[in-house]
Length: 269
Image (cartoon, rainbow, N blue to C red; front, top):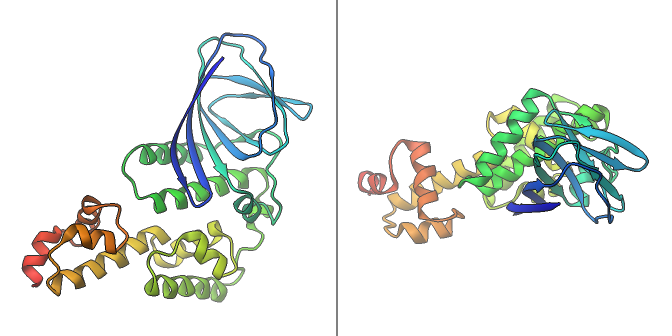
């Protein structure tokens, strides 16, 4: 059996791997326990996973979770191989989504059409030039939605219960981002004493945009102020404001204003 994993995201405790497995039909061998937490989405193919005394047939309608210390065996009824997406999470993020316990469901978890579409959209965005902060936020949201299929009450625990509490959480995040747009979702969640995925959901519901999108909007407005003040070096401006590069700055500013930074500089100066 040949397994190739291509890493397409690794940031803030979230890792996304594109995994291709090529094998003959037949029984697999027991694999040593890994020291990672993983949610694995099957995109193509079919195989049987044996772990902790139970077998599960896995196909593109089912995801499974892997936890540290668990040995696995993968049997293959067909010789066509399979492709999966592995979402790896640090223990603290797992605990924040699973009622404070660093653990994941042992059995298979069905994936709704909505979850499967979001998984594939995330994968496509990660293969491109999407903003890494946005990818992390989307990955955590995807993980939380998948885990809700297994135990919604666990995932909901710790979520602000009242409208007033949700508004206070949203306002606290906006205040922190106004002072420092570079604050990550995890940093904001830690300071506001809430889980990252709850903060993302509450913020999106209150403001109509994700935390990462709001961050980009703030950076675009700071860029406009700098352009109006006569800043001509777009590469330096992009670096100063936390954009990946000058092209990233241009894309965000154009999306926000309909104009390129060069055109804005001429109009505002």
